[in-house]
Length: 257
Image (tube, rainbow, N blue to C red; front, side, top):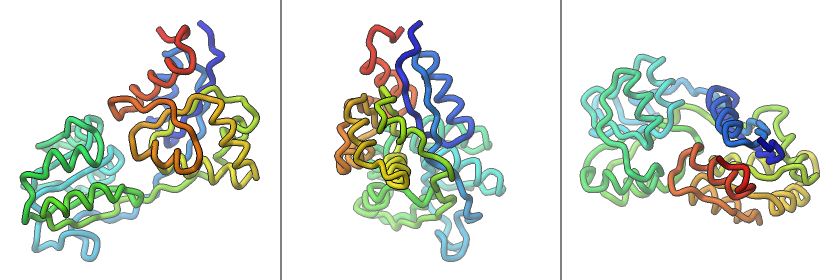
């Protein structure tokens, strides 16, 4: 099988990167792992004073947006109690079930907008707790508020760019990448920050525009395009497997099995 399709991937350096590399490898591509995100827990949980819904005002609905968030809450012995639990996608929901929690809702569209659509008719006048990273989309909070909810947010962890990341920016500038898989707006921004550090921003963007650029969803696409990066692929399903498959197929259809 031809291994000439070099695909950069920017997931955190944990099982998510391992799974991404395995997936790209199974598609016949050569993975270029360059973690652009690292998790820094805040130690906060819903119910902490000043962070979310106060102890005497338990939320009617709790929204969780990532597997990482679920794992941090489970490690802190937190549980949703009697609240309706909504998870943004199947991996988040699976992690919640593994923690022993009942998941009441997973939207058909795995995005902030999809989650708002799924619960908008049941939250008017109710307290909704959103527990997530410090880089969560405003689409979720604004949409919940527009639906009439009293919205509270708890920042469970911060997402930072790991020291030493950015080799993919050098490769893009040198024309050594065939494709990239951007999995969030932050991965786009951190990729560009790494390029700026190396004084290669314009060259890296030009290199991306000669390659196949995949974005996991519309917000990520919009971020990339706002920086002059042409996006070639946005999968129908906002999952890494769908993104990787679509990107490899676009980059080299004859290599995809």
